[in-house]
Length: 135
Ligand code: ZN
Image 1 (cartoon, rainbow, N blue to C red):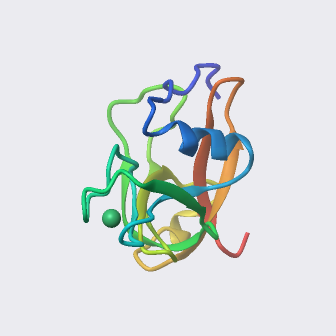
Image 2: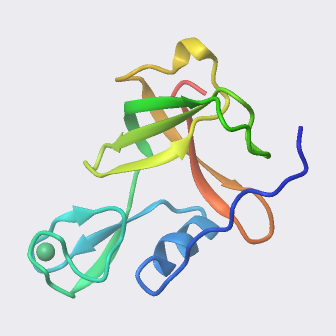
């Protein structure tokens, strides 16, 4: 296992709430107060109605694998060759990309039930990783 750190997260005024939520153990989704739509990744305004009246809701953290890839090349520590990266469709309808952990190759397939595993990777980085829902 490598001692290399994960890449640093990109934090700005539009995404600060998302990263702060993870530090507090919550997976948050940006919500438009004007049209009641959700969106991810967060942005400065609603992608549906362009309103700036945004807040956030807490996701259940449950969803399904919409798609996935296995990262083989290039090998870039701390990631291991062949690790799965999933596009998760949350129960709330938004999607996000994350590493898939604590899984066997047989558990990585489109439609598989997954749940969030909020993970403190180091002092600076807390991420929403996903794992099989049966974990
Ligand atoms: Zn809106």
